[in-house]
Image (cartoon, rainbow, N blue to C red; front, side):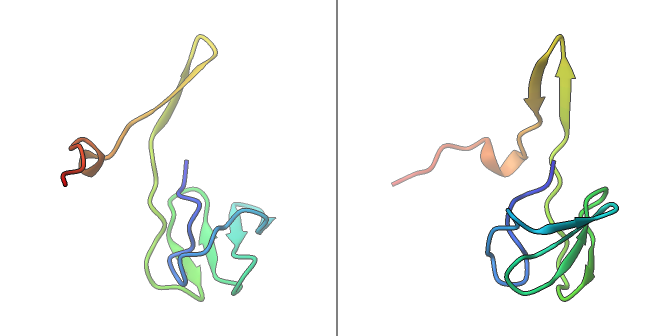
Length: 73
């Protein structure tokens, strides 16, 4: 699973065109690999990738360590 946020301008990738294993940002045309998140064109930083699993029809995702701590303040 990839984050739904283009690393170029932080806009959603939702609605982006899919070509093979690439997604094209619908806002600025940046291209990313859906397999590993790397930026192919129009952006430098890769997308975050989240590990998912399907067990007995149930989907689970591994939560990144930075999400483990509750917000303070």
